[in-house]
Length: 155
Image: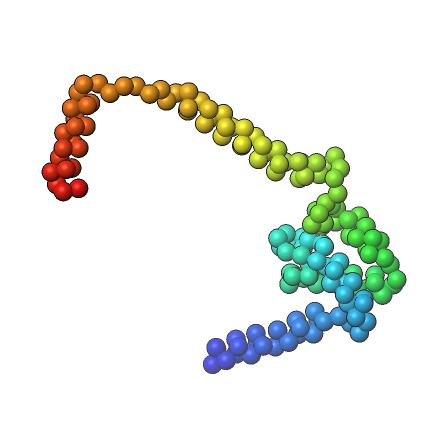
């Protein structure tokens, strides 16, 4: 009985969510604009999803705000500027290059170059440290014995 009740609740909640996630107007251009804008903006709750992909309440609210602003006749730039003003540059998947975001843009390439430099330095030092030394008489006898033993085993 519990399983049936849980299944029915899941079905009802998915139907309710599907109805709330649907666009309120039937204008395909407005819907396409809303989807494009929703994919450019980060969900502030999930952080690794766009608001188009997120099911968080805040993401649903932000999608609704985008649709309302499109209905009011605002441009995409005005809508994005509104979201940035309200939530900061973090809401953008591609934040602008400025003093506060320079680490986001220059950090990964800089870390890559530092890692590459450290690797090359390590390899050069390792090459210098490995000096070919001739085998001693004892080492030659052991090598000959090992090679002779291998031949004796049929290898």
